[in-house]
Image (tube, rainbow, N blue to C red):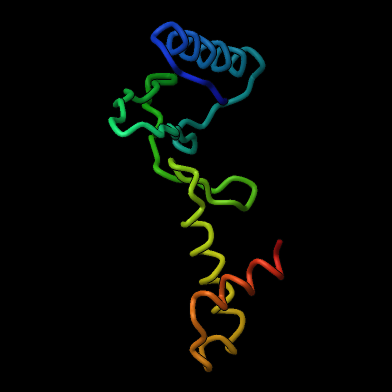
Length: 117
């Protein structure tokens, strides 16, 4: 689920949507695995507001700083530095050429940009 929370009313609407989704799952004989469910708040403000975790079926949903979605690592600031670091690490493991010649980070970046993008 995705929601824009800019006031208390939108937060209440978000909570009611989560409750409706949870009840829809139970009414349609689907088990919602709360231990695999994650919540991430993307907030660009300097003073971040602390949001209490959502509770589904008596279990709190884990709040995370980043998670992997369709192969891309998203973080709470949408900076993609964690994703680029992971791809660079993977490329170093697969291509021993980079390790033997000790190429700089800039060359790693260009290699990633030209081969993936």
